[in-house]
Image (tube, rainbow, N blue to C red; front, side, top):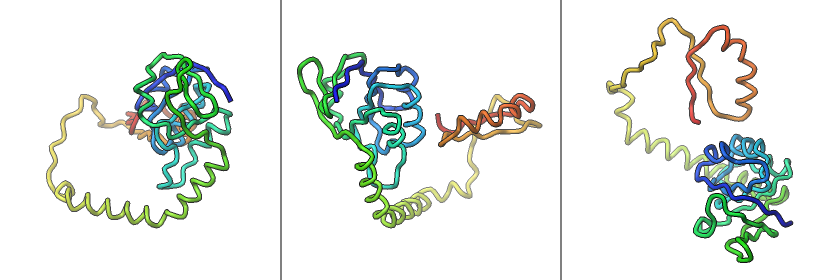
Length: 201
């Protein structure tokens, strides 16, 4: 596998996809590449995706990377942050079987992810699920102990310029299939003109 293209780099995948063009090579720093981010990458049709971090950390089952594999977009994983010392936005880079070159110099290497390898990592995640749930529960309780006053104190909330009175409100969450969900309620949005609150990007 030999792939060449222009590097597009961003620490936030949702910012990167706004300028990623077909045939570019996306360089991301995205631990646990979620389905929304993967779907956005697929829509941009890059020649390949290089992830400096682990696309599946095995903390939980993650289907995101499968979207890239299913779209025949190579995903090179765990390349390391040091890549950014050698590659800048707009550089021409080449990938050869997981090794990354600038010109003739190899500057980094990673693991070319395949479906069997993703399956192994997700299986490990399933086996560790109980431990991760316990960590999550403990973390939540710790936050409650630290910030319990927020539950009963009078919070000072800044005023909004927008008047909500008498208007319907639509809360949009950035999750799997959110684009299709928005298309499904297009008619409602046009007719009712609700206040739309976007959660996340």
